[in-house]
Length: 261
Image (tube, rainbow, N blue to C red; front, side, top):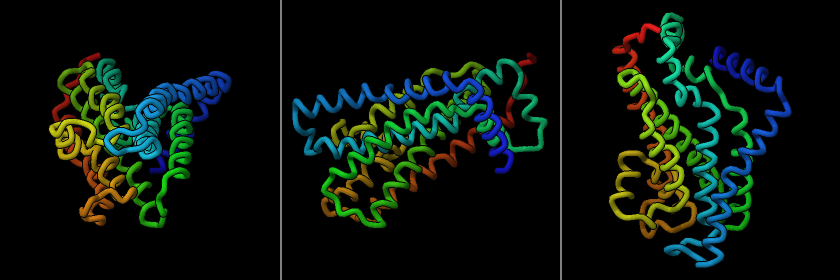
């Protein structure tokens, strides 16, 4: 991890060389999800609730998934731009270094300007937590922390899968955006407002429901007889999701053929 922190410091220093540009980009990132949140706010102003969920409950759902996506975009952006390394033949240089390819790709691109989007999500989270009638205790706060953590692992896993596909397609596949941007848009609302096949897919295949919807039922006391302990442990599924993604990545590395660039 010492190598990763060296990457971290170098990239931070390089991006802070143009501080005005850096802070303007941060401000822009702050307002990017604000438009989506404003749309959600006006939706609840008009209808009051959606399938029994009030504004602050959904705002908590919104904040968790956007915070996870912001952290992932900041720390795992190297996988999102991985196709450029394959096209230019620069991945060959990474392979001859005696360090993990995953660690090197993670350290190749860190988008610190995403801190603006993270701050906006944090403000919404604090606002929602202060206005929800929940008796917050250690277990619920811990569950909330692991909801965000599990979401980071899911988005990172999707980025890794998309990058792994470049070993066979060279160019990145835009279909991955369906599960990153699309997954973020979908998971900012509780899953039970969607059709059953969507709930199943985003619970058992890409487990957004395990890091957002199910533990939220436990926090809000809406489990309706379900096991609180089980719902509290659901974010672990999001963390485990990255394991098969890493397996696909390593399989792709073993079958990589240089572009010759």
